Length: 86
Length: 383
Image 1 (cartoon, rainbow over the protein chains, first blue to last red):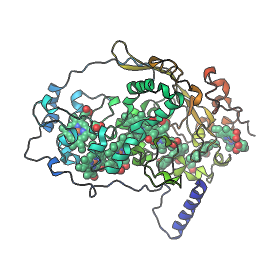
Image 2 (spheres, rainbow over the protein chains, first blue to last red):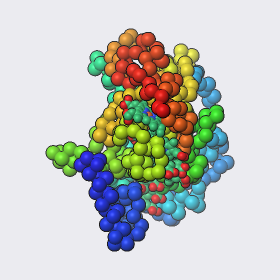
Image 3 (cartoon, rainbow over the protein chains, first blue to last red):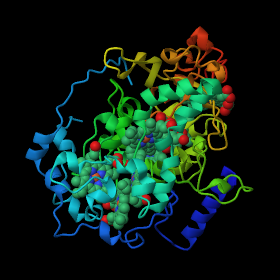
Image 4 (cartoon, chains in turn green, brown):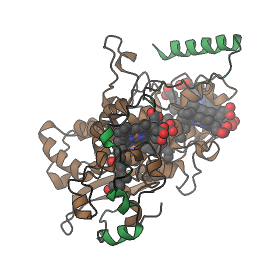
């Protein structure tokens, strides 16, 4: 379709909408959502879900500032030699 | 954006994250590794950036996005390759690929760079304790990569130039115009333009500028009365249709750059670059990518930092077809103004040679490359 035809169709559509008193039309076409949302998303495999009883060592450490500070790698200062805008 | 402490970058919010859909999944499902209190053991075969492999770690629940995104411009950086390929030759490909790996790959984008963390090129770090944000943050995500040009223009950080009216007046964020479909490389399909082709959701990534109404933000999509000269504004009906792109009248001066050279440091082994110039310009020229979607004859152009021997470090004469593309490239500045200086009156533009890319403004070595965009004569003063 050429741009002109699309615009004509658009104008006609808007005209028709105004005739039938339909509100809520916008000039930006609504983009259909193809992405499944919560209900469409398959439940994660059972084994994958954290068992509430089991300890989660990952989270234990990653939620503990002190331990992260202690176990963090020392920062190596690397001076950038780049000059000018990137 | 203040830098984060190393611990801050990896601090998971133990209340907020587990309360989300992703927080219900075991860390190991996405990151591999081993459940163990010792850091070294726990990190055995760790996958730090699962979304680097979105087909593996995200597609179970987000099949469409995860399978499309790897072909998108953000993942592939095809925009870079299109211009590199045009200026080089297949024989030079190995050297160019090595250069790309060292200097360009760092801007390659993962899902996490827009939804979880600051991009790694901006030192990384969680934005909100590992919670996956639906809407990327303008400053923590988008302008962390698109800062020096788009970000500075949009937010009004270039001296003496006001921010974009969509930001200043409309409080709009990047994602108000750049939708998830565009960002994920999801398109309406090839048959939209090529009736003979079978229905396919994959648009080749080199169709960067062949937008259709759904995929790219176009000024015309939101302001169609202006585009058709159907409003009260005289400037909008002063020219034949498809003569001037909106930016020609609506953008203020924007960034151009000269001569970028890339190298590996002998001292540290790290990649680095030097650019020679970085300045504000406003230049109108012919449209180098005229098409049904970009029909305008005149557009804004900026000088890009390409140079005949930009990649000299990697070999001699790697860009033998340097003249294949203009060095003054099509650009869509992000500093829209209601009344920009060149549109204050008809004769702010007509007869104003300073703002047209005439041959005398192009350096001698680049005149050939820029023939398609150079303007021969400036429109005469109107009475």
